[in-house]
Amino acid sequence: MKSVYGDDLELNWKNYSLEQNNFSLKQKADGTESDWKVWEDEEIGERRSLMSQVAAEAARRQGPELFDKFHLALLTARHGGEGRIALNEEDPLVELAQQVGLDAARFREDLRDPELRKVIGSHHEEAVEQGIFGTPTFVFENGNAAFIKAFIPPQDDAMAEWGHFVAIASKRNYIGEIKRPQPPWPKGAMG
Image (tube, rainbow, N blue to C red):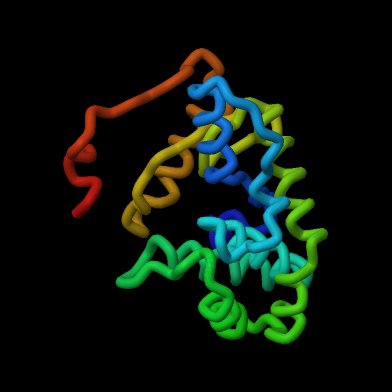
């Protein structure tokens, strides 16, 4: 999308912790209370994906272009290939950071900065206040928001797919939810 829209498409990635969300939902179901927050856990490698969120914030400190490269590489390494990068192991994340041109020593140092975990917590709590419950959720300039569960479309259909999503999600307030029967996914989606 960026190659077509350029600077007219601004993505402002923010953190949302599915681990915190699931913990909160379990508490609600159990009728229990706890003030535990995943981002306050100092053993970030013990959490499912906290280290990867801290890594993304560490990359952001080295500039928006390097953040974009790291974030795309992280998503691709997790969802787009043969292996799935571990989201709670430092060395693979540092290796990925080096591959996209980040200063690895600075990156490693920033992984230990507790301020980055506070950023993650702030993003998560802001999202919860907006009613966000999952990822990815897109929040548009007009305040409309939509969670989408999708596959990457073929390159020649990507722009049309994006255009249809934006048209429905950002401009059609009266469409509250669309779901498709699954499994399997819609015919042709996983070809």
